[in-house]
Image (cartoon, rainbow, N blue to C red; front, side, top):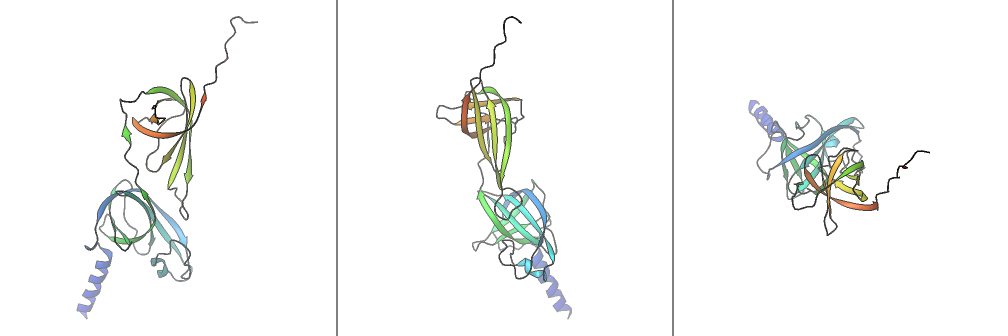
Amino acid sequence: MKALKLVGVLLIAGSLFAGKGHDWKTGKVTWAGLFPYTASSSDTSNPFSNGAIFLMAGSRPGILQRLQIEGNPYVFYVSYVVNWHTPKVAVDGPIQFALDPDGKFYIRDEDNREYKVTVLSKVISPPPVAFASNDLDWKTGRLNWTGYIPRYPSGMRRPQEATQWLQIEGNTYVYNLTYTATRNIVKVTVNRPVKYALEPSGEFHVLDEDNRDFKVEMASKAPLPSKPKRPSTLP
């Protein structure tokens, strides 16, 4: 009887702690969040019904943990239905993950526990942002405005990416620019100076406050309106 109990304990431990059969890689947790969720055992249309959710009887509420994991070359958005343990992870901290040939995705948390999670989406990881290049003809303008338009993939409460809009006032033109932000945003301050460069090929660069070089898209440009002249004599 004791031997059977020991076998049971070993089986449970084997299911909780990381196994050696996966090709583990190291990534970084760039975002994590917990969300309430309610589903019944007959719910097959919801993308988060990943099998573990059927451990809840009837329509009992549960908790979803969602993570964004930055790997190489992909950024993964994953979801886990919390049953007994919540994966212990730290934003901006390292995480072990494995993607098996059959498409199953696993993570290891800080306590070396292994969890099978559902991949909601994956995107190509953007290349690292370059720092200022001396080869460009940098000019100084003024940032008139910036804003963000998030894009929410189906079934997610956190945007997968955002379009950042910027308006830069140069010496002769006002430039309306866009940048697709998946990992970094252009760190700039409205009504403050900003450096920019326009290559002969038409590529537009913006240098942010951390001295990072962002290649942005120029949506439009317009001549800088002339300022009204002050009269030489008062009436």
